[in-house]
Length: 249
Image (cartoon, rainbow, N blue to C red; front, side):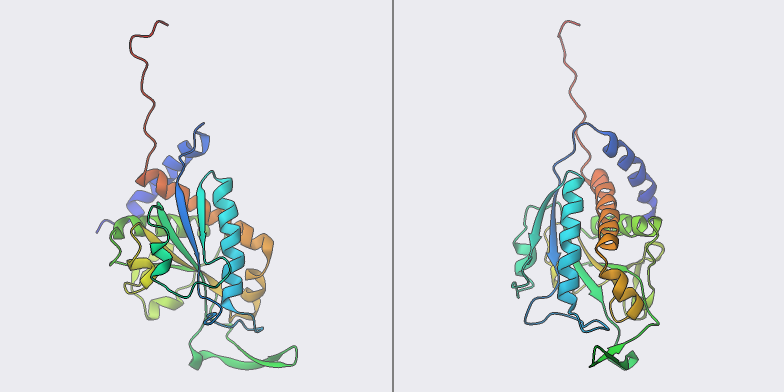
């Protein structure tokens, strides 16, 4: 499998051309809100559900993608969609499937504390984002390219990655913090390239506050949208205009 970092330089150059183009390709992006009300995912250090973090960032990402001229299908916006296979099935024609999540820490690594009079758990050792792709996806190289461009853009914009998940998931692209996670249903059942984003560790008390900040969410969303645009410019370059043959000057 080709190393995605070899394509990153080309993606960046193509992005410059995309940004200055008069006509923006109508790429279609499916943005999946991870988890649902019956299983809301991890609980933050201050007792908020991962689902609520996922909803806020997914909304910001949808807005950023639209600002970049892309079409967006927001899946599970209200948190009611329980079926994992139904998520990629609901967007068969999207050019990219992106699932938004926030990370936790293993139970044995958590420490107790009290917040607002309620017992909670935390771990301040780990913080930062990471991305995941599946080799079982029908387009694993394209998935990896998009994850790498997204990860590269996040770091360029000052967001810090984590190597926490390398303890369990092998690296797909260590420089840009992308891991293989082959059996994730939303990744391997998607018909298009698919990437899962762990935006940060909500069990970290300081990072939890950052992840809840709407301005920071908007900055992260814009970085992700820019990385997505760079990847899709490589995967689906616009067709050059046809010359008018035979027309008088």
